[in-house]
Amino acid sequence: MGVDGYKIRDQQAVHFITFATVQWIDVFTRSDYVNIVVDSLAYCQKEKGLLVHAYCIMPNHLHLIISAVNNNLSDIIRDFKKFTSAKILKAIEENSKESRRNWMLWIFKKAGENNGRNTTYQFWQQDNHPIECSTQQILATRMNYLHENPVRAGFVWKADDYRYSSAIDYFTTGKGLINITR
Image 1: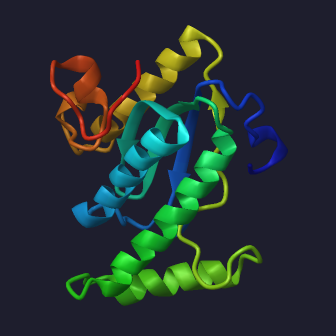
Image 2: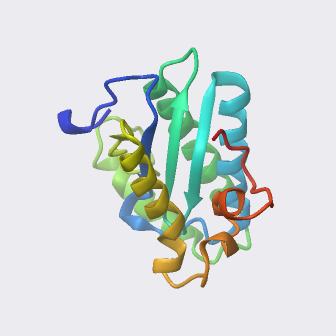
């Protein structure tokens, strides 16, 4: 996946992955679109052997610390991105209350036209920039980065107050939106 420096070499290893929308469009300010990501991750966990160790869904990108059991992690990511792209684009098209609908669809269409791999729209940027968490230090650094992202963005004062993150699972006795594997 992506440029040579950004390939998943060990398909069963834990990786820090980032997905961003094209042009960094703030799609995930609407819970309808966030729910598609959450439900899709849950499906991949149940049906494809995806293990989610940590997550954070920001307005225009998401960070995941993930691994796979009995499946190729690259294939799971490819399928996840393909499915969520189609589902979110359809939700945007059908959402009559979406004030940014025409603007967003225009940008996704232009991005798709500029990418030979797509026929119409492109929702996610091509690269995932996987970083293998091969040591406890790398894992801890990436986990901290992921959970502190909403704090750095000024959305919340404390990481565990952010609804779309696994920080609640790590820093409180509460449970987040996505089942995590420690």
